[in-house]
Length: 171
Ligand SMILES: [Mg+2]
Ligand SMILES: [Zn+2]
View 1 (cartoon, helix red, strand yellow):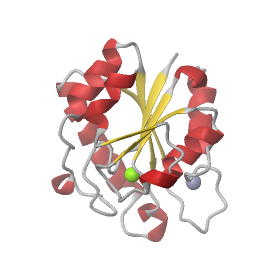
View 2: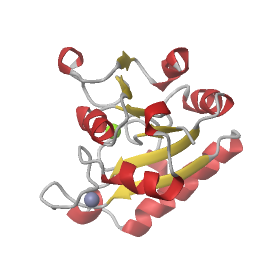
View 3: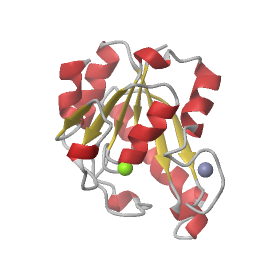
């Protein structure tokens, strides 16, 4: 199985900082069409997202799941199937192995689905997304400008694009 891994905030939805309410969730332009393209090219789609707001106490695990279920339904309405969502609820001081830039969520996904990492991709809006993917054996990486400010010159990403919209041009 080949997979396109997506970070959530800044890639799928506009980055608002510790998003945890449906009413604050705004899809980035073109995300549904991009995902339909990925599916047509026989990629499965998996979301890997840091959610330290949970450990920080800004919102609960239940809040996260409420937003996730709503988001997955929106995708479904457009014919997009998200295979799975992996999240790290821990904060930066935690010694967990799942918070990006650590590769734990990719490894969990690989253990569950037996993924061809060499044929897979990661799309993120932070260098930590790229680093985590590289550590998990994914060299096909895209940094998008639709979220956090990026340092394009010093990025390890294979491609830098304005948004997820452009990714299908290099698959
Ligand atoms: Mg992000
Ligand atoms: Zn974690």
